[in-house]
Length: 331
Image (tube, rainbow, N blue to C red; front, side):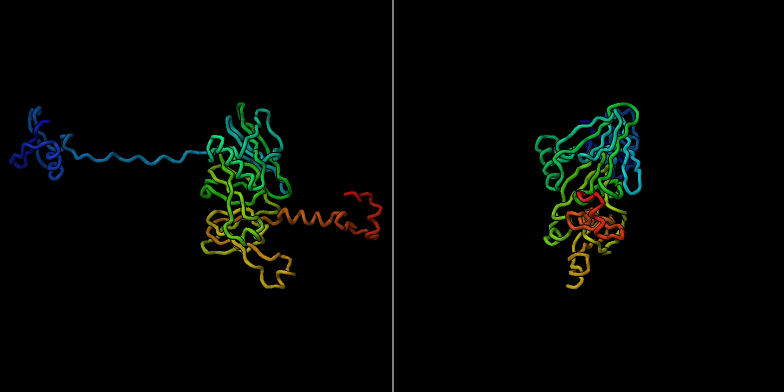
């Protein structure tokens, strides 16, 4: 190891080993240095070996890679909507079984076990876990994946199961997670994980309208939910509380606290027509509400069925007597 010599104002210091020379040069770089192999004294600032070893600039951390496919879409209709998804070659979309309306011939359709994402692992146990989560939410064990295997653009459309609106949400814009009611999911970009969300409060699980288990959508892609009637989006401030009918809550961000409270006094609960409890949603976060829950629509249809004693006079002057001759008694 060569010996180093430093000079400050004509005063020579040395011999020094490399580490000692670096320390002195760091303390006072306004001098000269020499070692064997140098033809003459060299300013310390020009000697690369005596420069303090600093950690190289740390590169910025890599941005999280996109897990879900990026898809384009267009929603058609007003009361009975459907969504048309545009796929590039190699891109895929996933949906519940039976939701497809039409597709191009270049779109390949296949059934997968679970939700089609890789969040639970790619092995058998990972797929089994994903399928088990779907089974707990009351959905089928299988989902359908639509992949564009051709060239150019490919299109596949999914229809709403009952009157209402289709709600598109980009998970990356809301923190990558969304809690929704069990039957609201329609379709999504491949890579979105469809899991479960447990209600830890007993009363909320019993009377919250959705039971103890709701769906949890995670990822960074686009998801499409369906809601009955008209959908309204509310942005709650920190501490702001919103009261809603338990069946009207479609989805909310994880930051929102979902609970229930008693609907007034005994008279209000028994004769108010709003049930025993209603939902309380406390911000911060976004909440999506629907004006016509499917249970309310189904209840009205069931009440009008003749087998249940429903009345369908429709303004006839004969009243109920006209029902004997209308030819529609086997509805």
